[in-house]
Length: 215
Image (cartoon, rainbow, N blue to C red; front, side):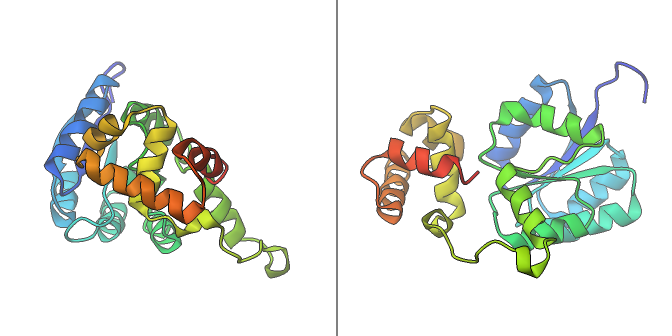
C-alpha cells in the first residue's frame, strides 16, 4: 500500500443506521470504507472484490459473521478480521478467534475509538476488551488454577443492559444513550431499572461503579 493512502475497510452489519454511524466514525479517523455488507455472504464477496486491509463483522447478522470470518480467513489470509458485536458469550468469543479474527470489539465501545483499535490490529495487536481477555486466560489455565465458577451479579446482565450501563459510565445521558443505541428513552430507563434490581443497588451511579471492575 502506498504511504499516506488511507487504510480500507469492508464492514458488515444488518442494521443500516448502525453501519452509517460506524462509517462516520471510521472515516473521521482516516479510514476508507470501501463497501458495506448486510449479511455474511455479501461480506465475503465484498472482501474478495475489494481486498481491504480489514473486515469488520457483526456476529449475529444473517448468514453468520463467524462463518464469514472463517471463509474470509481461508480465502484471504492477509486480511485482518475484527468482530463488532453485542455478544459477551464465551462461545462467540472463542469461535471468532478460531475462525481467524484478530479483534473482538463490543458495540458499546465508543465509536471514536474504533479507528485506533483497527490500527492496533493492523499493527499486529489484538483488540479485545479486558474482561474478555481474562476469560481467554482462564480458558488456558490448568484446571486446578481456574477461578471459581460462581457467577457474579453482573453476569446476570444481558448484552443490551451492559451496553446501556457502559454508555452511562462514559457520561452519556439517558437521551444520548437512546440515540446511540437507536432505542426510545423509555426503553433505556426500563433497562436501567432492571439493572438496578439485578445488582440490588439504589441508583445508576452505584451500578456503574459495581460494573466498572467487571470490564
